[in-house]
Image 1 (tube, rainbow, N blue to C red):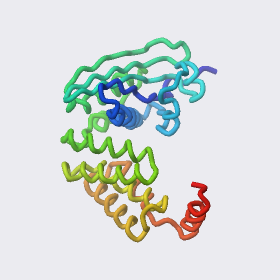
Image 2: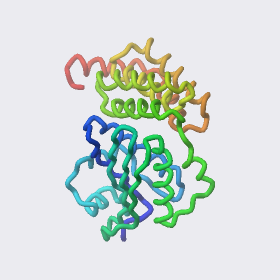
Image 3: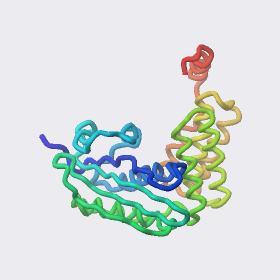
Image 4: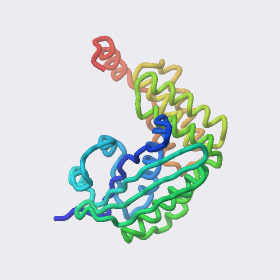
Length: 257
């Protein structure tokens, strides 16, 4: 039985920017494309946690497709320089390794949301997948402030790296995003996740972190009650049980974390 072509893996986009520190933007674009494609009901999109192990991999598309049981692979690169953005994307059949679609986007940085929308729509079209009432979600802009969006992507980048330093940095970046756009629901959701993770890993007392996590998650929902990330953030911001905290404390004491 062949691989399902509508089961798609978005491989981590390569950062080919002059500044290697712009890796956060390439990783962020990858995650945002996963989120947009996941809004298309006719597609089955592999989760970010499964695809990130293939970052900088030497494995071929066919091998990756078999490992993930994905019939289609989306890969590409990002070059960010000042306010200029160049994104290359290509859709590949994992079984035949033939290109189904490819496109270069040379735009201004603030056009990044339009690029995400176009890629999602072109993928759906190439795979002959109809969008049934999903176009509005695909085209939705999370913020109109590109500076706030860059802070948000930095926050996500450091949140994904975890560890005390990464989580503390992510908190600061999400807070900066909110300062620039107080109506940025995704940034509040990210802030909630950061506080929850700090508490979960015993880097911050629950009495301090849990209320902040709840407040941020509720603010995200107040701004956009359709935001799946905000609902998840609120659910995960519930206090950690005493037994769980004791277990983590023992692990820290014995150096097993």
